[in-house]
Amino acid sequence: MKLYDYSRSSAAYRVRIALNLKGLAYDSIPISLLDSAQLGEDYRALNPTGLVPSLAIDDQGRGEGIITQSLAIIEYLDECYPESPLLPAAPLARARTRALALQVACDIHPLNNLRVLKYLTGELGLGEEQKNSWYHHWLKQGLGPLEQQLSGSDTPFSCGDTPGLADICLVPQLYNARRFELDLTPYPRLTAIEQSCNRLEAFRLAHPDRQPAQHG
Amino acid sequence: MKLYDYSRSSAAYRVRIALNLKGLAYDSIPISLLDSAQLGEDYRALNPTGLVPSLAIDDQGRGEGIITQSLAIIEYLDECYPESPLLPAAPLARARTRALALQVACDIHPLNNLRVLKYLTGELGLGEEQKNSWYHHWLKQGLGPLEQQLSGSDTPFSCGDTPGLADICLVPQLYNARRFELDLTPYPRLTAIEQSCNRLEAFRLAHPDRQPAQHG
Image 1 (cartoon, helix red, strand yellow):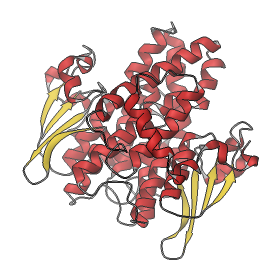
Image 2 (cartoon, rainbow over the protein chains, first blue to last red):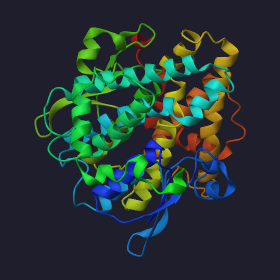
Image 3 (cartoon, chains in turn blue, purple):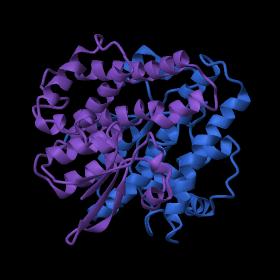
Image 4 (tube, each protein chain N blue to C red):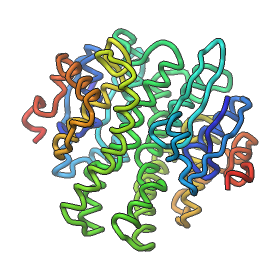
């Protein structure tokens, strides 16, 4: 498998964690968002959205092709490699785990990714302060309910004793929150889950700082 | 089942289509976004995110509880009610369908929903013209690649001869695009798929204009 990857893309970070949790080896192909490589012809021929990550599958049993969208990639991995499941078994529990993941993937991350921040400071001519207020606003809107929902339990991970899809989305989001200097003291349950995750090698090896130098 | 619903919420619209495609009866509980009912204490006790929709399940076989996030709800319905599947059977095909759905649910919709538009005109003090440019920008960023990806086939629906998860996300997004007067002529494949969908009663009955009057 080849992962079209960028160290600080939090959607790519999610997929790296999932691949590591499944114990799957992959080649990381860097697509530098800082150089806008994701918008180049070569990459768009693979993934017309020009978004990172994409996973290239070449498996005689399962066909070959490109999978895009981090959550679609992770669901694919969970279906094809059922060991170390990333979702619980029961439908209602699966729905709850997916909902927590989607709260990050739909309600926080899309508002704060690089292309949106560029639009704010470019087309809309906003200053750094307004950009940072925007960033913090959507983070707080999203992390507040997550903290409340997850405070109902004290398991090491979001949905029990093993890491799964919700944790895979949470950890890169908290990494971004720190980069943008959000005060995380109102979220003790989320940071406790983050600590449990970051004790695992699967999470540590996926961290942006641990990616190959050419990721920039 | 009870759907906490709002006629013009496109995430709720998705779930209404899915329930109809599965042939499942439900009670629609209106949560008026225009009155900010989704932010009231009663609704937040059910769904701390204050976002619509939520589905209340009360099924002795499958447990009871609230499911939030439209895609988590739809995956739940597809797992529990496997007739008229909303995803293909093979993992790679499932991944492609999910990716198309996520392109709408993560890359377009979150940038253009009501709370974001309110932030643009409220906190950021933008005018109508800048708000509409923002809206159209993210629509075009998302619909362009979708048109390209889906033009590789001429099946009635996005992923074959039966409607599924990608169509369920596409149709409400095109409804929104029309409301905001985006020119849809560059997207003939998408509007052809929309037409196929809207020939089906499951889609027609889910349309915002067909919801009970108290939805406002």
